[in-house]
Length: 197
Image (cartoon, rainbow, N blue to C red; front, side, top):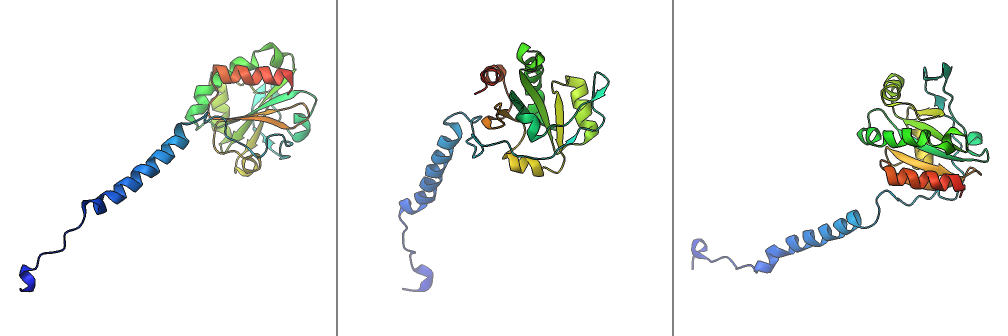
């Protein structure tokens, strides 16, 4: 028999199915991880620990009632009242989605009476853009710290924006919410902040 007429060895159809089965198994594992549980409650190694002591500059040119809006420090986060720290940026579309809930939170009696502080953590943003963002949508924050390079966000364990942290009266991180706040999440966080634990 010549080489030209030799019949190639027949391969099993299962050989072709193996890559497809491996892909399907991996897809199932990833889908389970993506769709199980609440994605906004990402575990953080910082829960129960003091908020990182970082130095943030104030947002240049941001005024409230004619006065410059200050930044915040670790000392401000441990003044015997709970603080909600919201990480935001003007270029972040989900930040625009959650912003009305932050404005409503700022109008709550607990925040207006100073029982709970609401501060902003501006992430990798241009000052002019951040001021325009707050000017157009309203400034709910009593203080805004700027992390232009994103280094302080690393210390805080920020995955992306928006993220919101609840800091207890003793300066310890009580909770972390990843993604945009909605009405239910904002109300729950504010209620927990008022309890202080």
